[in-house]
Image (cartoon, rainbow, N blue to C red; front, top):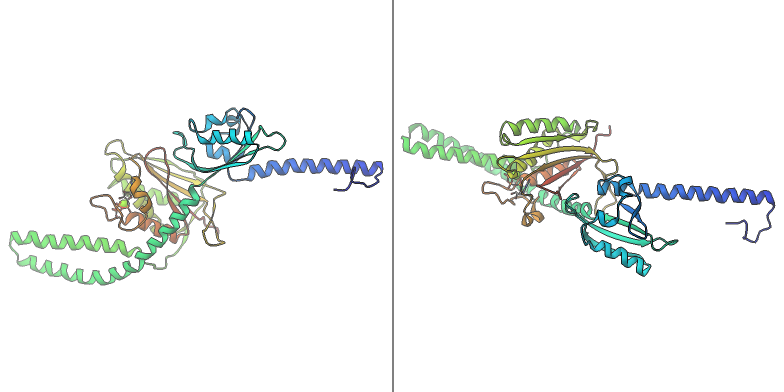
Length: 381
Ligand SMILES: Nc1ncnc2c1ncn2[C@@H]1O[C@H](COP(=O)(O)OP(=O)(O)OP(=O)(O)O)[C@@H](O)[C@H]1O
Ligand SMILES: [Mg+2]
């Protein structure tokens, strides 16, 4: 910058202009800093020398589910689990006067549920006892990865499904027809057997038809009101498999339409709600359906420059025991089930249909029960 001290000879007017310019730069610096911190999507806290919070950006408000005013009345150890290594990291950074990072720290609390994050703590240059505490939750990135891997899994059954549907359904209808013919002349004992043949072939046709849904038939996508989808699914569920379950709805009524296919979306949420109802306790079972609009949710697709904008988020949460740890890595794979009567196709189909919508589905960490979150694109026409 030219000006005072820069070696130039300056008159009084030029000096005033320069001072004004310096003020403007300082002002715009302050605005820029504040704006940048507020815009930064990850949580940021500024800590004083006693770990008291003196600033919290909106990312931090969202992460800790607490307003900035309240956060600024807290100390870091009020926000993190007891004895969290992150507290030691802050002490160390203060002591060494250098930036420190730690990856994959568990910073979950009973209130926030289980959460993993990468943490970076940086001493402030002007006052190294004050610390800039930033964290980056790794769940979405790692889950995206997992989700995209599941897409491959869903795809691999696509071709097989089409082949099965074609090859198996025809002979099955022959077998069923023959059993019905035999039934006409059969005695009572044999009729039990012909009935069994019919019932079992019907069951196989049912499975094959579910498999058929994996095929890549072109489907119309139109603006769909997601609340109408959820309403339909709730009606179907409550008149059948979820008769004894209490539903709770936390909806954002202003949510814009999703770009998708009504029937397929019904299928997605029917499968998720069926799992939730099966996991919920027989008495006192509860399912919470929620919708929200997330302005900023843009996800990078690994291995490509593409960014997915998925602002519409739908949650299905139950009050069952949660997803078994050993099931988690394979949850969305076909034929994975720990239920005696389960085919393990429910979530594979969910992953396939959500993928066809350009969305993602994840099994999120929840304080209680299981929480499945579906994120979908909005209709922008
Ligand atoms: N809400 C949930 N709570 C706990 N575990 C779940 C939940 N949803 C799914 N799972 C686990 O994921 C597995 C796979 O689910 P998926 O819907 O694909 O198959 P399934 O329910 O076992 O069989 P199907 O849906 O074909 O009847 C389940 O067997 C169960 O272990
Ligand atoms: Mg299921």
